[in-house]
Amino acid sequence: MHVTSAPVPPHVLHVTQPVDGGVARVVADLVRRQLAAGMRVSVACPASGALPRLLASSGCDVLEWQASRSPGKGLIQEGLRLADVVARTRPDLIHAHSAKAGLITRLVVRGRVPTVFQPHAWSFEAVRGVNARMALSWERLGARWASRLVCVSRAEQSTGSSQGIDAEWRLVPNGVDLERFRPAEPRGTARGGSGDGPLAVCVGRLCRQKGQDILVEAWKDVLRELPRARLVLVGDGPETARLRAAAPRSVSFVGAVDDPIPWYRAADLVVMPSRWEGIALAPLEAMACGSPVLVTDVDGARESLPPRLAPSCVVPPEDAAALARALIGLLRDTEALRSLGRDAYRHVHAHHDVRHTAAAVAAVYGELLGPETTEHREPITT
Image (cartoon, rainbow, N blue to C red; front, side, top):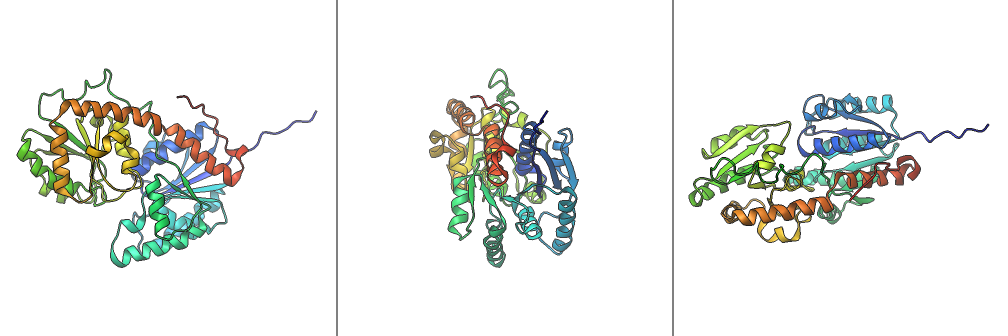
């Protein structure tokens, strides 16, 4: 009797640095969905940070790859360590996340293994002067060693293309686990229960990219109009001490948390004052929890919002006065916030389901390995 063997599922190696914040949550969600779809998945990343903890119970093979967050003198050693990981795991495809992992992966592999690079925001937007020019030159060169370059927003892709990065582009918007990120039951019970003033929450690494320094400056103007208003910064990072020194007393610092959902649900408004992004994950998570958001007009911001929110919920980056005016206007109007929250919830469910994201990534892999090897077998319901 002739027996036909089933195709061997592909082995995907994710390489990532950083291991905290939105990138870690994106990678963890993607890995879980890929494992559920029958793929063999490994992740190479530093041992510290949130990502190894997020993947601890997934069944994924997590391989320690010692690497700092920024390029530096250790780049060669980091490359040698990654080359060893690749040699040991022999992946069918490598998916590199963010600038640092994308830099080293492409230098090490140089196209010998199908390579997907996902910048999660461009490296040349994170620096200035000669460093920005060097980062852009590298991205232009490194594109030749990326089989596909995945952008999370049309704006991110447009920025790269306009800067001369010639790539096989694919658009895969970030998605949210809608079974986990959802409003309190009944909706709204977690919000405003203390009887205090309106609560604004910012979730993200405390660093220059996320713009909390602009928010703290704007908050001083908010307090002049709304003295009972409260602001909570959720996260930690290199700017923590400086932000604490500059912040008014009504600003609370709660540090990094394993689960931001209670803060999304408690917030009257979630604020993301970023200087640059690809498409920020925190606003999507907040909207899935039924909370309205206020964001800066960086890559992906307008795409992440329902059209009705854009006029009142998008402000220019690095403009503390404009941010303060928007905060005051929104926090004064409780009914409008609730209506915006309902719109936000419906929008995320329609456009940012993580199941759709995983299926789109599987389709990108299928272009490189053959569709029969990466067929996404998880049912998608609407």
